Length: 138
Image (tube, rainbow, N blue to C red; front, side, top):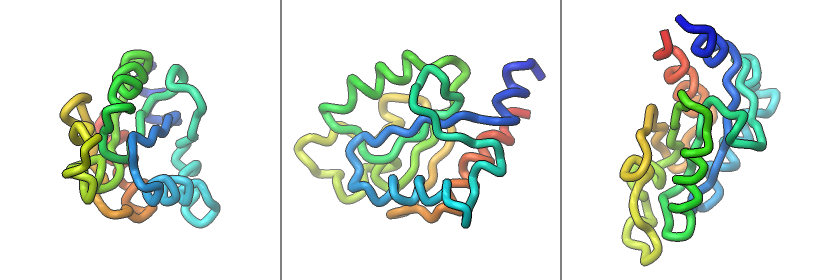
């Protein structure tokens, strides 16, 4: 295993982006940081810049306005980057499926490594999804 993959498995830095969700998934993602769930015990830290991230965590369906920004974020991310989609809206557009400004789920535009379904998904499910992706590294 290369040094990059060892570092990624040991302490992944996560960049979160909301592409048009109702904010419930965002609340659950932030709930993962509380002492009750303590996602930092796995070395997982939310970062403020995509250029420092190992994991791109996306919530919400892709809208017309967020599509160019999402693609630009993915292109700016250091490779290899893992993409995790959180919530039913990101997985299949959920209740927003027929919206006039919805262009599709995330996997239509980016390669997705893991899906965490639910409306909203529980913090335990989000943590399990992140850990599962990290375990696939070897």
